[in-house]
Image 1 (cartoon, rainbow, N blue to C red):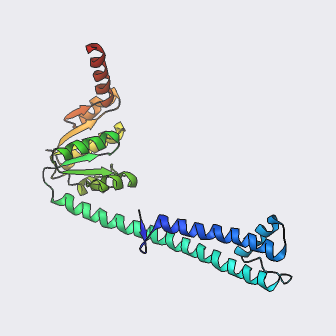
Image 2 (cartoon, rainbow, N blue to C red):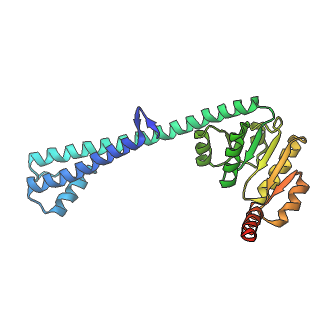
Image 3 (cartoon, rainbow, N blue to C red):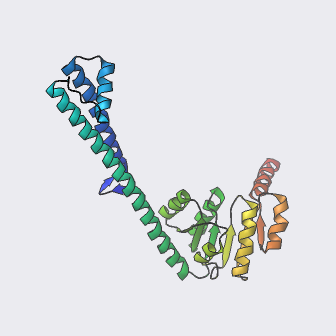
Length: 244
């Protein structure tokens, strides 16, 4: 839950929305009472007041005052919404920069750690298993939502383009013992394998393959082990069926 000036953003949005709806509903009701107008015209007058076009000389003094009041409230709501949006974007950007710097500092101090590239279902499961065995793990992923989810679980995450060698260096590829390319894209897994071996010839590369044709290419790129999750799943299902 993101906080904007001490108030959770979700709460502020709900508060502004509630004030807006109450103002529109209350204004419609009051215009109907004061001017004896149909509901439709009362609503249109309220909406016009919100836009600053509701005041006319033919109205009673109370109606004019109500129109001004509605305009002030609605514009105040609009300003608060705008201000909250700007602050939310600024806070989010600042947090990403701060967390990114912290993650890079932590990764730079690691030695002999594991790097998991791609934190989808397969990558996330690998991260959890490594964490259970008390292994140092750095996760590399380009999706902000994925990075935030793993950061909340206590993982060190480098957010960036996985095909950028600079991002792999930020993850400490030169000092790492093992890199696991767990993406569901064979071309990206091949590129990361090539880059990792170029930056650290001693690193152990475990690569995921989606298609049979990618297995040979990954081995040529330098992968020490190539795993096909689909093939493993099929093997397990066969063993279960044969055993039954």
